[in-house]
Image (cartoon, rainbow, N blue to C red):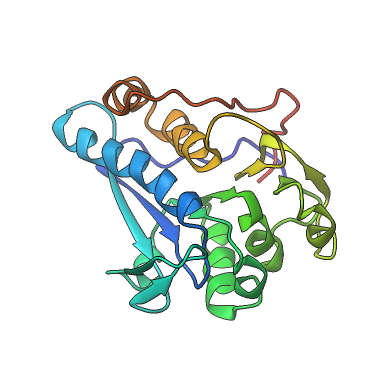
Length: 220
């Protein structure tokens, strides 16, 4: 199926963004991106321009322990992702196990079916592939997880910050910048470009990765 990837209707007031948490999720993958998006959400509420962002972390359980041992509470269950226009999938030591969890893979398939954009950080690509969404697609993953990703239905294992249709992913390349932060800024560039500069200024950080030139934007 071809055509320009659909974007959320800018005439609506809110774009819902959810980040998935699961056992042994990488804390930097999750909270690095969340910090950028939460800052953007607060600024979007102060502005009359562009959409307002509603950013939530969701999980199947109310308590999650990350791969670094940090235990944290999650206020929203997976049902809070039912209308999300953007779904962020962090990586982590638990990504392979999470890729076989029907609750998570069903969530991703449902998001894809309704036209949501999916953003995978590092080994979060395993969950995308586990949901069957990486078939004939180009997707980036951590440099140590390429062979593992190839055991799933996948088109091409890539590196850097790449886009194939509605799926964006980052991983596999050395950089002084943080993958989850770069991907979060890409979300802003895609859906709330007026927020990129003010968020960057407030956080005193600049994304270090840009989308590769050889992306395919015509696939859904």
